[in-house]
Structures are given as structure tokens and as C-alpha cells.
Amino acid sequence: MKLILRGHHLLCLKGFQGYGYDESFTENMTDVNVKRKQPGTAVTLVSSPDDICRSCPNLINNMCENEKQNARIVNMDNAVLKNFDTSIEHDSVELFDRIDDIFSTKESVCEICFNCIWHEKCLFYQNLSDNR
Image (cartoon, rainbow, N blue to C red; front, top):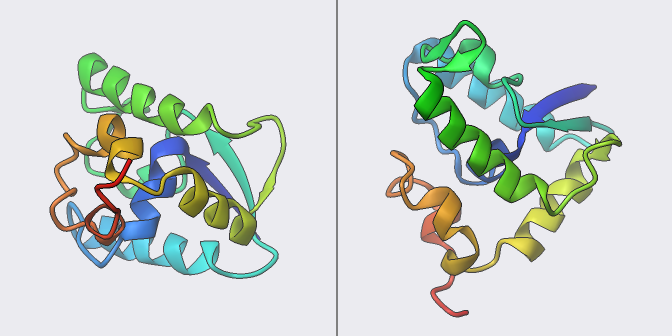
């Protein structure tokens, strides 16, 4: 099985607990979250619309809402992706284990997650330590 995931969605999937923009988005996010936990799943990393975005009501003309919002999302992606080789496919289980190692404090994700509309409900963010 293969998934295409944008950088910041690696963090979103770690904290996903069933909330979403609408029913279609939530169902798709749940499906992707199940797949990413399965051994043998390969992940291609991108900073553009991915397997999660395809069900997002905010995806307009292959862009997140508008140019300003899209640029903010791409910056979030790049903040995560700078820690990974984007030229190769990654084993999903290993990739998400690395997420735990790289992003282990609120400080390590503050620029990525703090302004996210979901950060107060996100288990990944809420369970991070305040320690530096």
C-alpha cells in the first residue's frame, strides 16, 4: 500500500481523533490514519495536496483556500519535511516513529502547530512536553 502525505499531515495524523471539516473529510482522514499504521505501507512525502487533501472542502484549484493560506500550509509542510529525505519512499511505521523522536516538545512544533485550528483538540500536541 502507498500513501502520499504532505509534511504537516504527519503531525496531524499523530493527533487525529475523529474531528474534521465535514463527514467526507473525516472518513478519508480515518482511512488514511488506519493505512499509515499498517506494516509495509510506503509513504511519499510532498509539500502539495496529498491523500488527505483530496477530501478537504478547502481545496480549491489544487490549492488550500487561497494563495496566502496555501503559502502558510506549504511553510508548515517544509518545517516538517526539512527533517526527511523527500526523494525516497519511507516505511510508514518507521517514519511515524521518527516523528516522535524529532517532534517531542511543544517548542519543536510551535511554529507548525500553534496557529492550527485543531491544536486544542489534537492529542499529539496536547501530549507534548513543555520541556525544551
